[in-house]
Image (tube, rainbow, N blue to C red; front, side, top):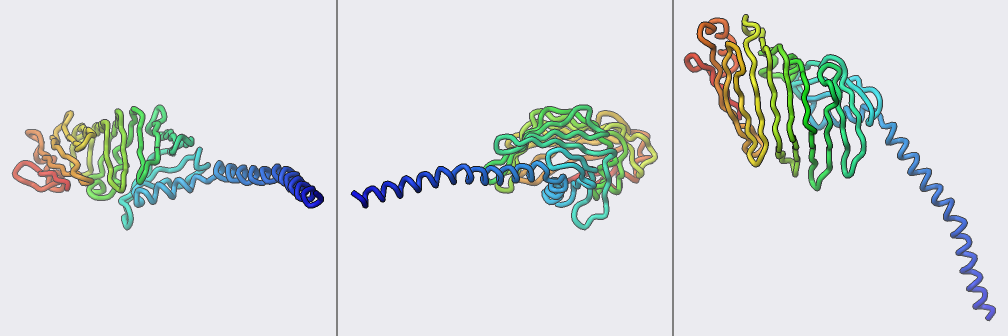
Length: 274
């Protein structure tokens, strides 16, 4: 009986000890979680800048980043990528807000120069990839920023306005492969270039339609430089064929540009990608 009573007493003592220790353990766990949460909330904006730089191989950079990972701003700079000396900064600053969402984050982007309302997106992680959904949006951008992307834009040095509209746009990356759904329309308005005395040369539209085999179409809205063409993504590569030519009476003013942007064949310049 004595031994049995001792075992019962020992168990009781251990139970009481665990009960006493449990609140302390939870307090420690709570403190650690709280510290990690505060650390995450105060994560610097430079973390996002570093991630964007790495993901785009330096072609898109967020310089002079301020604020936090969740609420910050930076100077958006487009470059020709690694080893390129070409770069152009967007006027003003790009502001962002990130909010955690189920297996991902909701993103709102607002550019001082170019958006009247924030462009909203949802980035979601998937098995072996990720998905980006862009809410229907409209924005205006200066054509000059394209010069930062290097060849051929650094030679053409376009001037004018870019009007971008997205509808149901969704981009999926899976095991390194990209799939596109929805539509994107980019209008290049009142375009001019240092390679021609004509100003403006014209206005143009690029339409991208997603699906199993996404397509691209180039057309002329107005102007003396006539552009048209079509293309399709085959796997991860765009294959595009088009042509450029001058309207009647404008051949001399556009001859230099036509010689540079493509392969000259008679009065036409053949444009090819891929």
